[in-house]
Image (cartoon, rainbow, N blue to C red; front, top):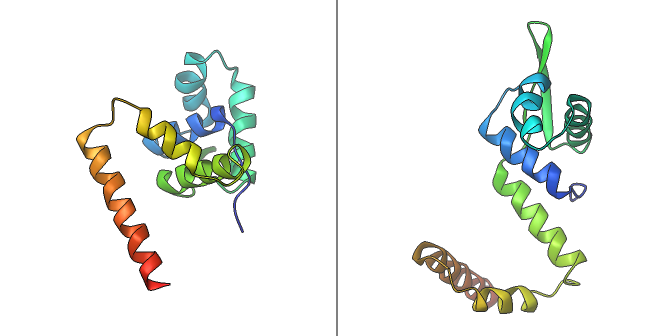
Length: 128
């Protein structure tokens, strides 16, 4: 069963927490929140929503809750891209691929990754 969708701000918070594991709400509010003009209560609400959606976990340590990601960032990004393709592009990858073909600043590494993905897709089609 896919996880519930998340918004841009929640995705940014997940990226932050992936880099700052075991952070308290106060620490996140002071760094992530202040930089974005978010109150501590807003950060807490976002973190608890992400926990309710099973993206974050928390544990009680020395009288405070410490939050960390429940899944890897690659899974979060995969879910976000999947939801974008399904909701925004009606399940069609063609508009996304067309956009990619027009993007002029694809690095050599990104191009190699894309080629590897195409090879993998072709291989899976041959197996079917």
